[in-house]
Length: 116
Image 1 (cartoon, rainbow, N blue to C red):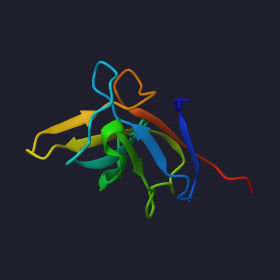
Image 2: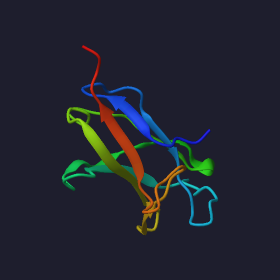
Image 3: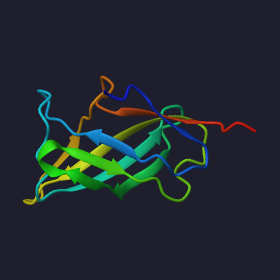
């Protein structure tokens, strides 16, 4: 099942964000020998909230990655756009679309208020 919008409560660091990175034709990107970093920015202000933080490659051949929230990444309420930057072993870089990506190739992430 694809994620339509990833939601996480303000100030929490779990669950991790897991995604399948894909080529333009929808096939998984083989991440063997690659590094992957995550970035996220506010959709309202364009302010960068997470800037190229290392992600874990879960299943290289299937393009599955996971970003584990850190520090203050979820301290601001709002809707954010997220994307993964793949660096191949030869140094080439790709900003990868992921499953359920928006038309601009980014993931929609919503940081919501916890119940009082």
